[in-house]
Length: 414
Image 1 (cartoon, rainbow, N blue to C red):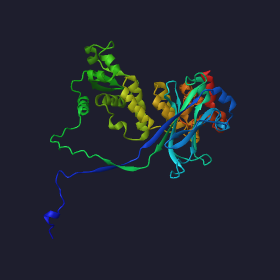
Image 2: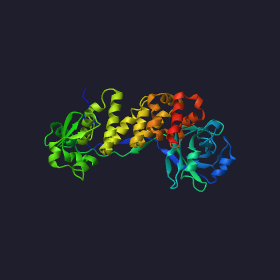
Image 3: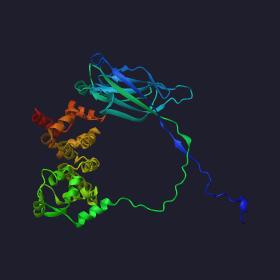
Image 4: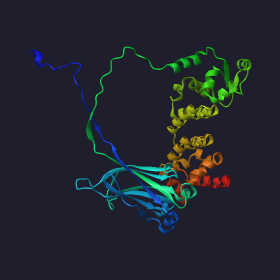
């Protein structure tokens, strides 16, 4: 049966549209605790004793910070612990007795900015009134680090606590933007990298030749100079060779495999690594990233350094972490170095596994400074860093390989 025209739904182009959104958001606030008599707090409060801050209100709740200058327990007595606790559970009878919140604790520098290496977050946790296990915190600072740092001045330092409380989910109206007029011309994505890659592959107009372990590579000096500070100095600066000599005689590249130089050239032309650098086995991809990291440092290619550094951060495992750590230390890759630290100290079992590897046994000789940094635990940002501290305090619980490294370190660094 046909529907009468008067009952058919309207389908005109000017029919109004509506939209809504489900939103949450956060209630946030900060409290800064000033410790203005640090020496007295350290001398007068034994391990397990604390001083509580004045109450402060965030999100309709009253909170306080607990400051333990000599640690929470005897085995961590060299750490300053900071905790956040909920003082009153409910602002009104309608509020829930437990509050979900996230706390971020930070040691502040003299400009009142958080010190990144000493900033820790709890994640989203449940807080309740004292006595109900609703208090959370961290071993935030090693005292010996604080006392040697510029953050302690005139026997004073500061710690901030940012509290973030999730709002209840709610719905809101949203404005609807009018639809755009359909485009009549489709613009393709940029293809400069593809064209430059084709130019490298074809070798048209190449004016410089490289010899790498018996293989020959042709390239274009101006493209290389535009992409590498080292090539720029070699071809356009004081190091430049004559046009005749650079074309008649190949430039020999020592200490590099052909496949690594091929990938380096591909990145110079296309700003991306070829597929074979990431395909295949995990250990092969990690090895290529290590070689390219050294090559990028050699030719002053900052973006390739970061690409390889990021790739290696994702390929760290028990067998390779010591080797990657040595590489990061030798070439001053701080992000990669921190990633190795965090992998090694994420748990006591992980640390023991790393200590037993062959790669770790070479660290005292190849990189005594980085091993000393790990052992002193002065700049490790992870809140579980006390595993290193435990290794020093209770060496009998660790494997002989660790003790051998420690003894060798004492010889190398004294």
